Image (cartoon, rainbow, N blue to C red; front, side, top):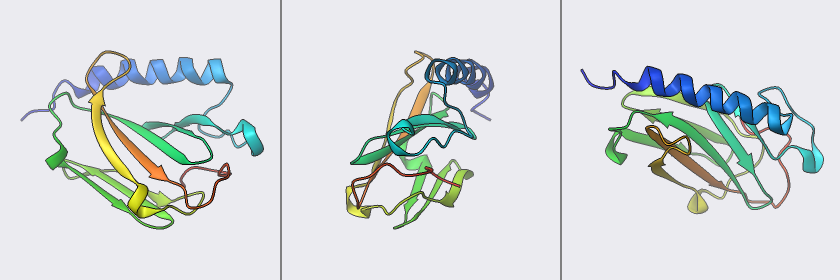
Length: 133
């Protein structure tokens, strides 16, 4: 068993993410380009970026430990797996400095549960036209 409480937390987090998307005017399909494309949400995660790095946040169960997390950092690909479940596997919008990329597990900003925070160090300092696809 275990992980049974994740459903309720995910719903409240997605509500929070929807509110955030309305505030910022962004969303999963937003690709304003230039300086406008700084934050938004994807399928099961939120993200933000500046010229130096991209940060992706995934809601995870409150009992998630680092040993359950596997993140494959490629130069232009990213795969995130938690407890055997693939949360993300895709092509990135730019090139990553693998040695400057990491992940942490933090208390969720909503105050409920935990978040897996994946930070990607950018090789070139510019706004990516998309984060991952």
